[in-house]
Length: 156
Length: 480
Image 1 (cartoon, chains in turn brown, blue):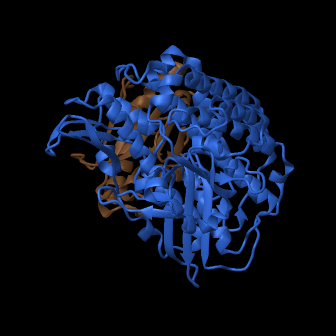
Image 2 (cartoon, one colour):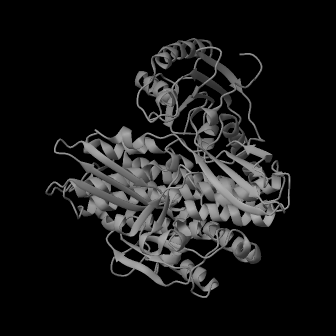
Image 3 (tube, one colour):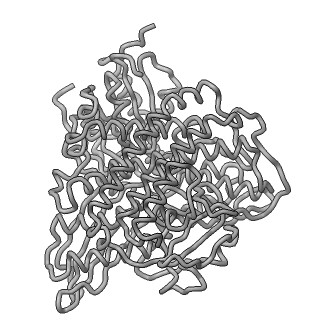
């Protein structure tokens, strides 16, 4: 169970698909830092069960790889999408937020950090040099964002 | 932060394989041919060559974010063979089984509640804005909360047995690398009775739908076929983790049974067709026309002599009675079969949690090294075959996988054609309803294009209508 005000960070993607592993790698590095008030989850994709974890969190930051960004990375607020098409096994972050609201009556603040990659699709491990650079910038962007929006430390 | 806004990310164009259906009309605008094409990313076999056998059960999980545990276990079974282990220590086999039942359960729950429920509750022709999980939850929020809780229960089991949700390491060549601690066991036991009740409710829902819509089920993408699955050695019981290959024909006659799965390549041929990336397996002795078969939950119900857990066995007998004991050759009854398997998995999970072998400390067996390993399990979507060869340096030199979606390739193509003939013939436009009928037929097989194509796991779909002159007269696309 999350603490009120806790920040849940979900990094998702497949580390076996080159730069699609940006989200999990971001989350792995963040977990290593053990930041107070920040809980980290890593997964291949978002599914319905993330709605419960999201509902329990005070805030949630989704971290995913992206292509076609006009910047190395972007961080922006999300709104729940109650009309999201659900024709596949995985969900968009907006749909997860909508499910958290619909199922549990919770509407935590949701944001998305999108980090640009360039090598997708091939079965390969490791990030491209461009993705590595963008990941560093994404981490810096996250730190600045967290400084402006500090996570509440867990209650003892 | 400013006002909420969206960042546009294009996951589909980014890493997805995707499905494309082409429907060819003749000069009378009747459906001549319908084909499901899979556009894929290749490279897994190349990726796996040169890897050390010890790391294969972990690496193969990168094939697929939808059912990584299935690949983990199938690869581990193949590696058991390579390290010369034919019988695992009881703790190892039971931990692996627990992992597998948790995986199958949560996968089936996701498919039933998330993907199928909107179609079943609101009808295939309902408007897209109504036919989604949000509407299901608005009408029955408790159902939605149960589905999430059941998913989470399955995930907790996977985490407890595999070590973590993503890239688990639990199964290793020759055994398992952990047992189940008492605290985790008790946490899971505290939930299992409730899961059992919910599984029975879900089964009642799927059964009720199938029987209440008997005409639709009997006529929607329904056609005779062969069925293949593992069955337990000796008594033919449903066994999702281990067994012998059994195949039956559409009338229930035995094609083969009691076959060691390490002989799969003697029995099955992987046919190649120029218009599809995905192969078309068939039973060698019957040839490509008569030898294609279906796998998956319904095929397993058809193949199994019985189920060795009481509630699921009663449900299995009930289902068999609905077809007079003959094989069920429909597509939509797969939903009923899935929920019988969910109940079976929860019963098995409960039994295993009460088994003290899970706290045993004999975790790994050893044996005499072999060059070749074949592992087969019944994954949520059906039979899954992993086949490897390794050299004297423990490096993989050969890899062949037949995943469930590939086994079902011919069945899915026939299902698409059946629906196309019934709902699209004589049309020059593809309506939302038509598109969804095609999707429902494909979805009944719960294909994981990710596995079949070695790309990530959504199911974006494009349908093209092609006239007798080869001209595309309409096209409609839905992204996952």
